[in-house]
Length: 255
Image (cartoon, rainbow, N blue to C red):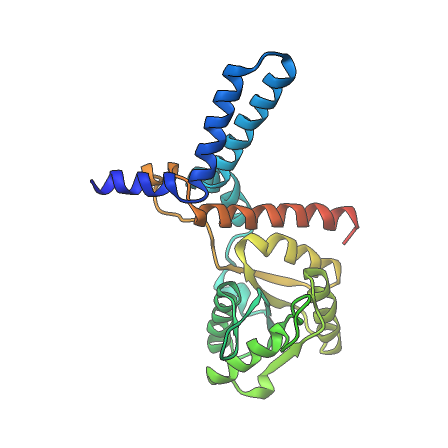
């Protein structure tokens, strides 16, 4: 009964229900097709259903998301000791009824930066501006506030509130980097975002020790559940698509 309920839930809630409807419509359209144009439309509907299924399943994350997250591996303990500062990139904030809070991605990145700070005792830079189209504090300001609440001294926290993109994160941090004559910084961001972020910092003359965190891919052994569509898998794969497009965009613009 449990397995049947799990299957039914995946089928009758988005994105499963959307995939199912697209598939049924595609099959019916193919059966009723009277000319090549109608057949082509039916095949397109089935193709869309297939790719949406792939993006919404654990199999899709294995095929697409995992390679993005494993592109850069964790650094050695010895290499971390050569870092002059820790850089944590903002990953979004959420405005609640009470206050502005860090998104899950920002919080995971910041927690890893905090753990590194507790071990290495070197300055920590938080970077991120205000979200587009919203008033209120910048991401970096909220991150700095949380770090102070966690017990980090204010003089050990450097704040950049100007950056709105990964390229701008790298640009504004590079100014701090060169002003302090640092050799390397430890760059902390989500694993799926690590490659693009690392490239952006290197292009701005900042040598980095990349430290990926906030992994989206589930490294548990593949099981039958991974073949069911889910909103979690879809969200994870959409993050991967965002990064893939971002990498192409940066290469196209030479950034």
